[in-house]
Length: 275
Image (cartoon, rainbow, N blue to C red; front, side, top):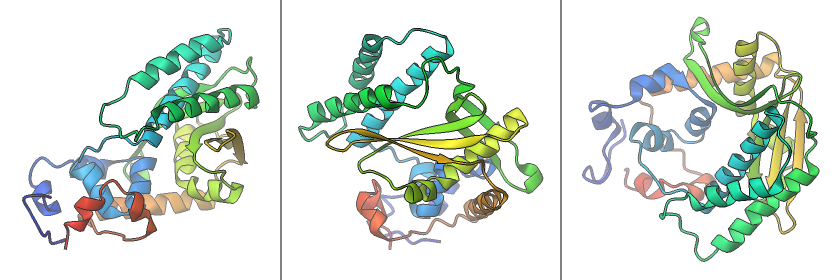
C-alpha cells in the first residue's frame, strides 16, 4: 500500500476504500476512458475514479466538448432528415460555448479559442466525407456488454456515430496533425471497445472504423483515418487489458507511473504528496 506524506491533505487509498468507495462498482464495469487512464497511471486512476477529485475543465476540453456537441446535433439532424441550416448550428454553438464553468482558466485566450473552435466546425461541414443524405445507423448511443462469460466486467460506452452499413466513427479534436500510425496506435483501445459494444448490440461485425480528427492548427483541417474491423488479436489484447484492470482494482494496486505525461496531469500536486 502507498504511504502518504500528509494524510490531512490527501486520503490514502486504504482509508478511501473503507468509506463508501466506488471500488466495487469499478470492479463490475469498465469503459475505454477508465481503461486508458488505468494503463497510463494507476495513481491517476485512483484520484479520478476512486477519490473522485473534481478538477476544472481545461480550455482544450471545453473546445472539444462544444465541437462534439455540434457534431452530435448535425448527425441527429441527418437522422431526422432535416435540412442543413448553418445559422441554427451557429446558434447552438454560441449557447454551448456560453454554458461553461467559471473555473476555466482562459488566460485571455477565450476569443481566439472560440473562433478556432467554430473554424474547425466550418472545415468539417465543408470537407466531411459523409453526404448530407446519408442516414446514420446510430448517433450518440449508450451501450453495455456483459463480458462475464470471459471472466471480465461489463463494458460500457457511448458511440459517437455509426454510419450506414455499420461503420463506426469517433470524433477527435487535436492540437497537431496525427499520423495514421499514431492515430491507430493511440486509439486502439477505444475503437476495440466500440467494436465489442457494436457486435454485442447488433449481432454482426462492423464494416469498418474511422477516426475523424479536427486539427486546431493555424489553418484548421480535417484528418480522417480509416481502419478495418477489429481483428482477433486486437480483441485478445483488449480482453487481457481488461483482466489486468479488474485484478488491479480488486487489490487496490494504485501505484504511480512517473513519465513525460506527468507534465500535463491535473493531479500532479496530489501525486507529489505521496511518498
